[in-house]
Length: 428
Image (cartoon, rainbow, N blue to C red):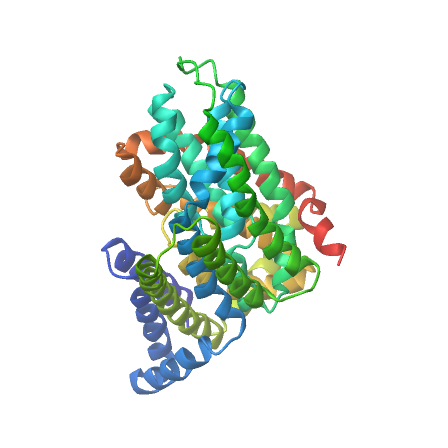
């Protein structure tokens, strides 16, 4: 297929998505369009049906609906509120301490859920009223919540990393470990912003935490133990990512029913339904993306991209910068999973040819994915925060400049110092 047809397909795909058409069907539409140009509509349909089945015939993908269910249960049990209260007890004296507490509790919460949307929505509901009560400005509140939301995809267990591992046949546990140091760097940068801009907002004095909130520190222990068990089990080789997801679900149910006693059979059923709906949407996107990935490979587009790159005769660093710029621009218009399914088949031969470490590239892709989550017009976290906080979208976008800046800094550091992503995985 010539370059004009490829570009036309991408333009049509973006127009379909921007029109409000479901992402999964947009991916499938573009895939069948490309396949039809090669083999005709009838054969293209047969290939699509076959690929749809094989796309979800993977043990790795079992982890996704289980982590989604775990995220729903964590939200329903009130773990997030207890984590926030515990962080507030320790940080209330610090300038910007409530903002730092929001970032810190979002980090721990993210290490249990693996979802940016769950993290931003749950922590938004918990933290926004407290931040407003303390006198924080709307822009700074938006900065704290959007920043915390990006940690959901960055800090393991990350659903995005699971999809990347599935597409590239890379070790999920190593991918999880690769995200730890960049994720910690983001937490530090976000927290420093909250501390050093504390004077910019004329916040009212934060009240000394009540005895009830101090009691929440004890209760938060069970929430803190969740990521320790999940990630510790994976890193120590006790269980796989899929098994860890199942352990997370059982752990959350035990905590909800026995320890906190906030979970009932009715609420469990509601969380099961919510998780099933979300999982179905993600599964449809995976199917559509897999068909698109097959059509891209079928048309030898990766080889054409590789040939074009080789003919450019530029340095590896210049090429990496170009790739990151392209990912950033595409992320402004594409949904996260759509972005991954579109670019990863094209990147795989380039990564192999340049002899780059697949895990290193994965971390840079993940940072770009997080940028996509908070960059208009497709930044999903922006709309979540706007809705949860009842804020104008323009205010949320202004607040998002802080995490965008921090993400770009971490991206540049990871680009220059690959060991930030590779040191922990190399220890296994």
